[in-house]
Length: 500
Ligand code: TXE
Image (cartoon, rainbow, N blue to C red; front, side):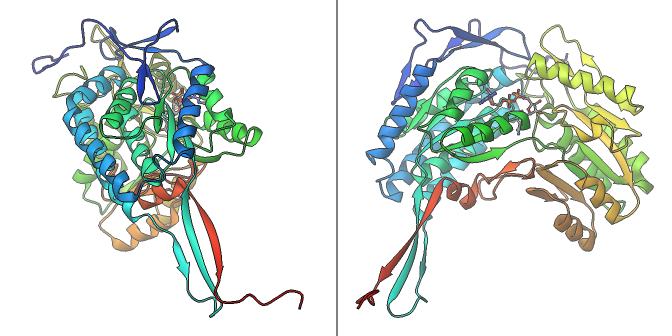
């Protein structure tokens, strides 16, 4: 590993975090601890408490009390906006610390983590405006005797379960919108990446969020996560993670209190490249789409569907790009591709690489476990001679593994793109406006990119079609998800009597 430009090193001892309830950090005390080692360095970096179900009950009770006494939902939008704006500023102030722990726990490159933290501050700043502009509707067309209103009310106490691939970004695509709506919340981050969620809880208190409005319980999905989704006093759950656990969330909602759900699940996202595209641009975009965040990205462009006349040439162009990407120490500012976040994920990716070869696909590049003497790294991988029925072409791998499938016509490209149970994201690369629009209309995906990929920001909503999930996060749509509407008929003058 080239370590010439490494500027940071892992801590000499792990930092201990408490969980967070009612505006205070609560130390682990007698609770068991979960110690997290950096996937890039193999040394312990953080320790978090394994919360008990009593801790969860306490956190939910704090969120319930904060919601019901209206210390947050009863404020006017401008006051809520002021807190969210201050939180954005505090995220910027603590950006280096957040990026450092994000990189240590997740394994993503520090330069990428810094960029994400800046984007997270922006989420808060944008959502602050939505706290003021959120509104309902009125009906002035019901005749002289009647006026109609549709008001928006916060859903109540939200449970938020987040994954390990973008611990801070996914959190910040939700928390400011949840708070902008007037809801209170209890967050359960992934057990392997809890640090930056706990830092955000401190930031929210420092920004002036009343106590009890944001609580964080830490621990495993099977114990604390499951108890949260079954909880009778949580009104809504937003879950981001695997499709399997997504099903468990739906089941738990049905078996408990029919809590409202938002789900962002897996993806097997197409990158459709036409021969008339700017192929240099497209090759860079496709390389970025599959290797960004080591492909551990629900929206990663993992299926390259490319026009047959340029397929071989284009696959080599992507290969050359990926070969120039620097894989290595996530704390090195020059690194493009960091470590695989968990041992389990590393095994999953390597088993798909073996399966691809066993199924008869051709390894164009990568496919190797890289040995840097520390951590776990996999070289970016491309498979050619792939057919849509192969596991590597149909199942979410969640790693830097790209499958190449050629097409001859626009309609064939659309059919291959839609031949999946998922519908999270898609990209199309072409200079032909008709092709771009036809593909954008016909491919089923909640997020679409034309001549770019993985673009995002606070304005446009996120979420999936088909088995990629329910609902939308971020943007005005994201705030509205955390509200429920009430319709109000108002009689003007005297109501005509039923019985005279
Ligand atoms: O996800 P899990 P994992 C996909 C990706 C990956 C696979 C497994 O394919 O290989 O999922 O990753 C909590 N009740 N994605 O195992 O288990 C858990 O603690 C309630 C897609 O990490 O779904 C964590 O906080 N909660 C993806 C969160 O759910 C439970 C992001 C996600 O964990 C729970 C990550 C339970 N029974 C993985 N079990 C995306 N869409 O971005 C676990 N959890």
